[in-house]
Image 1: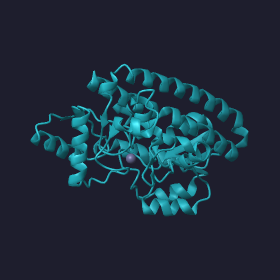
Image 2: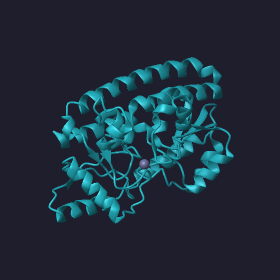
Image 3: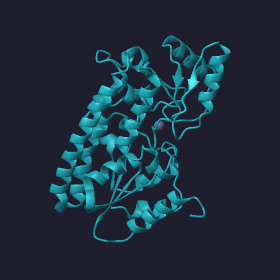
Amino acid sequence: MLCGCSGSNEHVRNFEAWMQPNGKIKVLSTTAMIDDLVGQVGGERVDRLSLIVGEVDPHSYELIKGDDEKLAFATVIFTNGLGLEHGASLRARLQKRSAVVALGDELQKRYPELILHAGKAIDPHIWMDISLWMKTVDPIVETLTLADPEGKEVYERNGEALKAQMQQAHEQMLEQMHKIPASKRFLVTSHDAFNYFARAYLAESNETSQAEWQKRFAAPEGLAPDGQLSVADIQNIIKHLAQYKIEVIFPESNVSKDSLRKIVNACASKGLKVILSQSVLYADSMGSLDSGAGTYLKMIEHNVKVLQDAWQ
Ligand SMILES: [Zn+2]
């Protein structure tokens, strides 16, 4: 282990193995959160690979060497959709393939009332609410069954087991978060990735309208992290921190902490004591396998634990 790049070496090995024809269907998912569910539904019948690897921003992801081969070789490609993958090269390549299933777009067709909007933009961060992400299991089962009809029973059985596990995890997360007093459940992070999380886990049960629960979450950067903070952005977030007596703000694993540091400093200059959490939250990417946030459910559990520890 001379180069210290074992993670990327492992990915190259996975890619090479995945490219070997072996009779299995080859499933490519843009994000690791999708790939995790595909693995649980498909089991041994599918060879799966995630396109966007490591703690990089999926919003602006552009194709890198080898990605074209992956996109061309895949039997099935799952994307998040809802505008998440908006890097120009990836978007152009996805438009050329007919085997693409955008799970978020599928949810929007089936449950339009559950999808959140920020102005005209759709909020793509649907994985942040387990009970919503769980609803992508059916389209995954249906898509794998179409590609591999002999696997129908396996996919359906695995899908049902996965949904039951996710439902249980969802209820546990809700219970954990609601052990914290409502007056403390106000989250501020780098970018607008936690709206679904706030609606599901931070809001009081009577805060059902968007106007009511939205105060539970705020971020200085928009739906895609861009690092461009205006004076108004900073003033708005300071006002929000003061209004709800928020004492700690949380960095995200794959987003620069610069904007949050600016906010902490601006707060200090106004005599408002706000600290930056030492523990990061996982939003747009899962952690590495040894981070304790290396699977989809572990990532959400990690976030809940970090918030619990900070808000106790
Ligand atoms: Zn995001």
